[in-house]
Amino acid sequence: METNPQDLHNYSSYIVHYGEIALKKGNRTIFEDMLVRNIRTSVGKKRSCEIRRLQGRIYIELAEPCNGNMMLGELSRVFGVANISAALRAEPSLDAIRNAVQNLIDKKSFSSFAVRTRRAQKTFPLSSQKVNEEIGAMVQKISQAKVDLEDPEMTVSIEILDRHVFVFTDNKKGLGGLPVGISGKVLCLISGGIDSPVAAWRAMKRGCLPFYVHFHSAPFTSAASQEKVVEIVEHLMKGQPGTRLVTVPFGPVQQKIVVAVPSQYRIIIYRRFMVRIAEMIARQERAQALVTGEALSQVASQTLSNLATIEAVSGVPILRPLVGMDKQEIVDEAKRIGTYDVAIIPHDDCCSFLMPRNPVTRTTPEEVEKVEKNLDVEGLVQMGLEAKEIRDM
Ligand code: ATP
Ligand code: MG
Image (cartoon, rainbow, N blue to C red; front, side, top):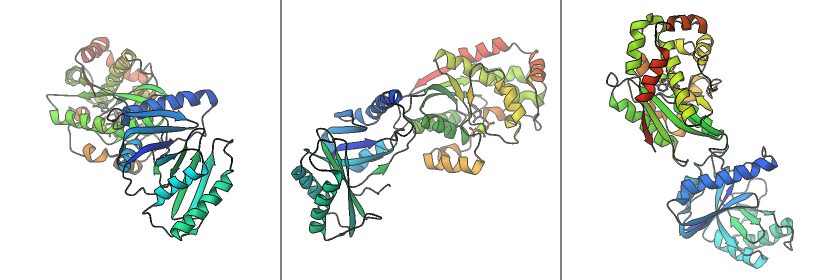
């Protein structure tokens, strides 16, 4: 249960808990190491601190205490974190625990409470239950509040480990999911619209380390549209390891397509070229899949048969994390993750460039291959690749 942390001044110890249910033994170390690494990237660069695995948790000790709310905010944006607490650290003895709890509840007002002790160190002389009773009696005496194990206003948590005991009252919920990087690298096709940032987010949540490709039709589309994509990627990567954005000028490729193929096929063929170019970029960077914001809908580019025609040119899997979502769910998620406001700023979509009114909604790969006979497919892919620009962020 999340309790809303209030006024957490000057804490130097933090305990990160993560979901461990699905973790098998061997995977667990990899998971924990990756999480430690990502936490270090997120909070460790700005501050001098020690971050380590500690008996099924991650323990962060800052050299200088800092505002707990700020630390919890930063840590809650790291994928794989289930919840975080700002804690006081004590020696493993009942007296030390008493002292720490006294300090912890000092100045806090509450009318009901519970004490919950977990013991990862079974040689500690008292059972968890006994610690609950001892500390509960003390808290009751100091605060005059009543014990309520069902729905307490405040919970005092005590975690007894080998060499340390941590006590804390609040915890902030994290994003959950898997640490970014643990599932491998993917290339996300990012358009500047609402959907693709949500798709990238979902891929990250399942442990993918994303980098990004954006196709633009400058000078036919504005520079502001590209800046928008940069802003979205920056936002997505807050709290995550660094990334790379590849931008590909697509206008010259589109111009060749426009003169060589019947207009109703343009959108599908644009998409096939995006996928071909993206696959090459993915291979260069050793990414194992592409990620798109495609869902199933009745727009021409997203009917099942057209998705199949687009996918037919890809030699790497295409992940579509949004496939089972409806538009409102995607919009809600975009708002929650903070990409919506930027995404709805009007922009020029490179695919609406020279678009006909009635694109085909039903195609087969064979049919489209015939149409593409009029094009130098290899040459156009190379043209796109050679003109690409890279921005590390
Ligand atoms: P979005 O909201 O992400 O733009 P959409 O609902 O508008 O998606 P489409 O325009 O059909 O749908 O695009 C489907 C997917 O193709 C996008 O989610 C994105 O992954 C990819 N895509 C489309 N245009 C571009 C582009 N200019 N650069 C990179 N990827 C693109
Ligand atoms: Mg779009």
